[in-house]
Length: 252
Length: 168
Image 1 (tube, chains in turn green, red):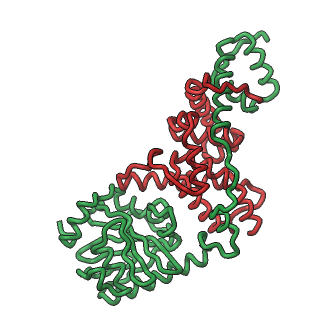
Image 2 (cartoon, helix red, strand yellow; image 1 turned 180 degrees about the horizontal axis):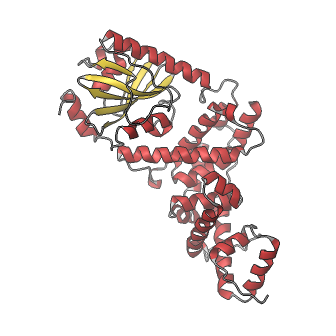
């Protein structure tokens, strides 16, 4: 080979990985003969690769792996089908509607897709706030009561229904907002509600989210993540600040 | 659908290894795998037979993890560290093992974009083009990330106690 070319790390990697065409492969091998430094680098990278493969092996499937069992189950309990997720959204939607009507709020409309323009976060439901305690809340009041006085991370349970605040944050326009998960025995959802003029307004609602099974962070719902971003994407309040606001009924 | 589910189960060991590299955390890895499986099953109707299921799942996991990182940042919470890892069932022990060796530590010290390329190319045997498709970056970017990652790993592991000559 008359032409000498630089055996940089990218080229050595491509050689190792079989990504070079035959002609280029021959050129690399010829160049390696005259380049002791490249040979050392290549050998060290190979050793590192082999150690990675040996020390981070593929683990055989566990015989009683619960995730495998649930995937293969005729009616998997973990993964919910689309229809069921929609049904869940509708069921909780009804609850919100009833909540709004019962407490003199106004239902503006549901947001179940990502087609909303981002400038203004639409209101899904609007409900009057009260000082209802969780212990006295009716099933329809559970969501409102939890929004009003629930601490992040603690689930409020009533019968087969539960609501849990995931986090609390302040929006760019100065409202306090809370991301929450809600579920009953057969359905679950996540939402974001903001407090405006003494009312909690549900501004985003995702019936495909599952707040009770593992990955419950906002990351499980792109729709809610988008909604929180549109509200400013601000950090969550510390628990102490959240408690102070709850005690003061969300006044500053 | 039964075939889809069976393929999904067969993929689980690879998904778990990829997730452990991606998240560097036992609990987060399991969560990401479970959430990815849920999402894949919910959207199984949109899956096109003949296309690579593994690539699709890897993309889903990356998106979920990105969202999770954003959520953690929003909550100002630290992510779980290796020191917090504990578990009793078989899967926990398996993942704990994955996270506890020297090569693992060296890999974890790489930036995420480099770890992921190592996971796909070196551990999973993906081609550069497949890796580029999964990551939605040019092949050249895959090559540069891979070269930087390998150079760092070679410095840490290339003269390690268990010198193994590559069979490749």
